[in-house]
Amino acid sequence: MRDFLFDGARPARIGLAEAIFCQSKTPAQIAGIVETMAARGESLLLTRLDEAQHAALPPPLRGLLAYDPLSRTAVLGEEPAPVGPPEVCIAAAGTGDVPVALEAARTLAFHGKSSLRLADLGVAGLWRLLERREKIATFPVVIALAGMEGAFFSVLAGLVPGVVIAVPVSHGYGVAEGGHAALTSALASCAPGVLTVNIDNGYGAACAALRVLHARRPG
Image (cartoon, rainbow, N blue to C red; front, side, top):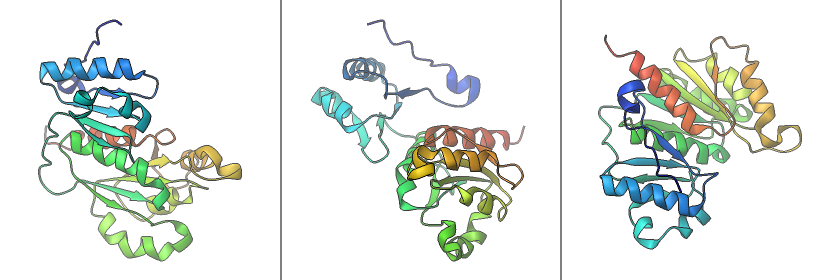
């Protein structure tokens, strides 16, 4: 296998570290990457690392990873300690959205940003969102997650002033199966300025949030 070419200049170039997308990689490829980065003393974020792939790694390498099976993420090396209060609110319509929410949270944490995570805010029980609206409205960036019909995105974005990044989630059934109905709702939102990432892309939503936060820094 060709040596892994790590993009070490990425943080200086765009403010985001390279992450390893494991879904299409074999355990041998993942092991080679982890071994290479461990030898260099580098930290690394791995995404879409399922339990079977993780279990297939050699035990010494597994021991180097802080693995979370729910979000399917792992961290090699020390995660930067978050500095200051949370700057991103991760708002999930239901508990079924939590795995994707955790992927976003762990991506933010890897980049030194803490987050406030709230769940069960969906529009089927609108009072739950309204009770937390004032708190959510204090955040400059809100990552919103929802499956089913995705009405949560428009409702939330109509209530808070921060940047709302919609993450359609793939749970649901019938026309909502696979997250496509939620994606369409996010893209067609009547609330102005809703940003949308791909289905189940908690990592991408976190990276978008980090770009927003970087842009808010004094020049």
